[in-house]
Image 1 (cartoon, one colour):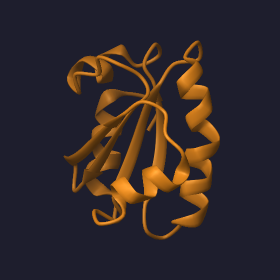
Image 2 (spheres, one colour):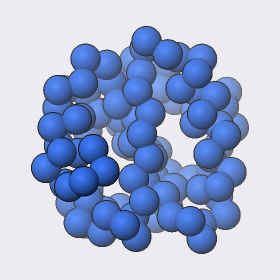
Image 3 (cartoon, helix red, strand yellow):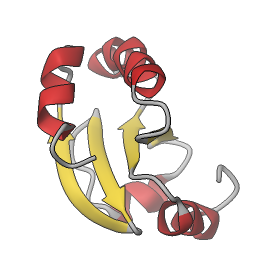
Length: 103
């Protein structure tokens, strides 16, 4: 998945579960705050959702392709299609509330 934009596309398209993609950067404070929140979500919702991270500096082509204008941005994909987009840091209960009916 980390090798190319094509393998990213394949991953989100062929996943049997919805995929939550966290677009982030190392220098981004709110992104760092979301790290543990997303890890906990992945742990609690194992078997219900996949959570992956895309470093916007390492993968600028994906940032452009998905029109990432602020980070953190989290996009939920089902069958390779965007079904929901969230921006900014938020606590776990708010994230679960935003995604609960979608996964």
